[in-house]
Each structure stands twice: as structure tokens, then as C-alpha cells.
Amino acid sequence: MGLQFPAARRRAARERLLATTGLALLAAPDADAVRRVAAAATAELLGLPAPADGGELGLTGDELVPPGARDALGILRSQVALALDRADLAVELVRRASVDPLTGLLNRAAFARRVRDTLTSLSPDLPDQTPALLLLDLDDFKTINDSLGHATGDELLRVVAERLQGCLEPGDLAARLGGDEFAVLVPEVADEAGAVARGERLAAVLRTPVTVSGREVLARASVGVRLARGGDEDPERLLRDADMAMYAAKTAGRAGVRVFDTAMHTRAVQRLDFEAALRRAVIRQQFTVRYQPVVELADGRLAGLEALVRWDHPERGLVMPGEFVGLAEDTGLIVPIGRWVLHAACQAARDWQRRFPLPRPPFLSVNLSVRQLQQPDLLEDVAGALDASGLDPGDLMLEITESVVAADQQTMLERLAGLRALGVHLAIDDFGTGYSSLAYLRHLPVDTLKLAKPFVDGLLRGAEEAALTNAILRIADLLELEVIAEGIEQPAQAAELQGLGCRFGQGFHFARPLDQFAVEALLVAEQGRAPAPTTPAVRSRT
Image (cartoon, rainbow, N blue to C red):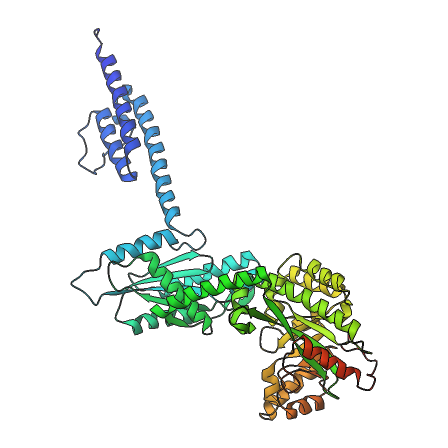
């Protein structure tokens, strides 16, 4: 190597220092390490003693920088700035990998890691140290999301997260697992009662109405509780078991708290088997329809038939809708089931009209689920069932639930208006037990209310309850809505309703749901009656 002048040697040394410092900055794991590397390199460039570990240089200005080192120091500053940006980005990426972006709570993966850390830290010397995992799922969140929009749903989730954080005690962890599911880890509870108390406290906080997008909504939650019995528990199994307990709380009536037990796992497996059987039933069309008569209260004359689905199970026989419709709703299977019922019932009704002609054919009533109403091809389904069967649209009544009435989203209203434009009648089923109000009734394109059974039962329980039923009938009359009273089981109920001006009724007092042959016998009996008046079975709302 040739001779170098002192200035050249210093320049070469600075270049080597910048190269090695650049590599060290790349390897620095965090911002503190970047600052330590920068401080050491700066001290060497300025010919100062290296700072103590983690210390800083006490520089006061550029006058301390030798002229030959200023360029190198500028390059070093650029390297350090880039390294700090990389360190900040790495921290942000780690944060994003651990945090739910909507609520700021831990996400599922990070929560599972923290649960695992808590379990592994349990001391064998403290056998009574029992962590509890609480899983919360919002009740009716899908209805809120579908009716008021996803932006409102997101706002509600943020409010729920804030309320959960406000309930946490030191050491507790909260997470959003996804969708409308949240979880809370309580690192130590005294016993099962203590865990339930924490769950009830969380559920109570969420029961307070929430104002989002200018509307007051309820964000009630069902809570499942799973106690960890030891450090060898698996976090995912804890979450699974808590989820089963939460589902049990929903099934028991919602907005409650349930603690996991082994029987829940057995029921969950049975539910999976039941779901698989229901899916096979849809493919094989293992369903049948029963028809409950709707009668004129004045003379008992047949006015209509409500189609009610049954599952014709190959081993269990007829399975009632209460056993499978909830599962069908949860899984979406209610859509193909409902479509099949609609087509089968329309075909049967038109066939009866041809074979058993009456001066005023009974209308056919078919229930539509919320899931069906959310399908964009619903109008085509209904029109297709009418076209395929030849049934007149005016002879078909579609029943919707009051939860649909609460969904005043423009799309839903347009869908209901589209159904009315086909010429079919629309009825609100179980009126008085759900969400509807006079404001909804004035604007919805419905022409019939089906008075819920509790109001029918209340007729004979005292003047106060009877007055409420009477008020509903008067309001319906003012709004030009027909009323069908459901669940009539006693002659006195039928007589009272008739006296209040209710025209139609159905229930066990008149007939239970009938199979095809019993319906045909009923139609033959109707043919033997005196001619019916010419007034329509159901009036259309003007």
C-alpha cells in the first residue's frame, strides 16, 4: 500500500466508520439500539470519548465538528434517520399484528398468546389461582348491521370496546376476536361465582342503550365463561369452550351468562350432526307442509290457509319447526327451505282451487324469514312460484316478522314495495311482540296484522289487557289494516274478538295444522255450505 497523507488517512477511516456503522444500524433491533450506535459513531467522528452504555453526547453545536468530518456527520445523520424510520415501522407492524384496527383492542392471535403466557406463568404453589376467560357475542348485531348499515355497525363495535375497557380491572385483558365477538381474560377469580359475577357485570354495562348515527340501539351481549383449571390448558380450547357456553346463553334467552360444562361439548357435537342431517334434508327435500285454517270469526267459514313447514325425518318422523328453524336461520339453510315451501304451497293451493272450486277461494299464507328477505333474488323467487303454479298473486299472503319491520333501510322497503307490486298481500306476523311501531305501520306496504297470541290470551285476564288488544284493533282499522288473531284456543276468546270487530282468527279452537288429505276434506265441507258473500277475503290497503 502506498503512502497516504494524514488527511487521506482520516478520510478513509471516516468512510470505514460509516460503512461499519451502516451495517450496525441495519442490525439494530429497535430505536434505542439505533441511538446507541449513532452516539458511538458520532463520538468517534468527533474524536470524543465514547459515551457510557446508553448515554448521550453533550454536543452544543456545529462548532465542535472538525471541518473534515462535517460531510461524514451529515451522511451519518441520514443513516440514523432511515434506521429510526425502519425501527418505528417495525414497531407499528408488530402493533398492527397484535391489535384490532377497528377497536384498538388485542386481536385474536395476540389474545391467544397472552392467554398462553398467563397459563404458563401459573404457579403450582398457588393451586387456587384460577384465570377465567369470558367470551361475549352481541345479540341481534346482524339485524343492526343489515338495517342501519355497516358504518353504524362499526361505530357500535367501537362503543362496545370502550365500555369493555371501562370495566377492566388491573391485569385484565380485552380483545375483539372478530365480527361481534369480544373476549376478556381475568387472570384470577376466587371461584365460579366470581367469574359469573364478572360476566354479569360486563353484560349489564352493555345493556345500557347506545346512541349511534343518531339512533338509540341496544347492544346486549350473551356471555360464555370458561375457567382455566391449570397451566397445561390450551388457549384455543378455552376459547372454543367459552364459545359453547356463550351459545348456550343465547339459546337460553340471550343477554345472559353461562359457564361451560362438559355436557355443552356433547350438545355442540350433536348440533353439528343435526346441522349435517338438515343439510342432507335440504338436498333430498325431506320436508312437508301442514296447513292451519284461518276462519271468518262471524260464521267459521274458511278464509285462508297458513303453510307451516315440517321436517319429514327418516328416523324421527315429523320434526316440528321449533327444533330446526333456528338452526336453519343461523346457517342460511332457511333460504332454500323457505323457497321450497313457497313453491310447494303455491302449487298445492292452485291445485285445490281447480279441484275444489269455491265462490271465494281461501288465500294462502306463507312465512318469509329475515334471511329470505335479504336475498336480492327474492322477487324472482316469488314471481317464479306464482308463474309455475298459476296461482293468482291476490290469493297469496306473505308474512314477515317484526324484526324485519325494524329494518327500515331503503333496500328493505324497496323489496317490500316490489312484493306488493307483484300483487301479493303482506302481513306482519306476531304483531305486538317485537320492534314495530305506528311510524313503521304508516309507511310499510303491508295490509294485514297478525295479532300475537299473548294479546289473545290477555282478553280473558282482565280489563287492562283486553283494552290493549282493543286499542290495537282500533289502530288497525284506522290504518285500513286487516287483522288475523293468532292462537285462539277457547270459544270465549273467539267471541270476544268478534265483538271487538276482529274479522279473522286461527288457532287450535278451530283446527290444528292439517295435512293434504284433511285440507281436501275441509274444502269438500266448505263446498257444501251456503254461498259465501262476495266481499274479498283480505282487503287491500289503499
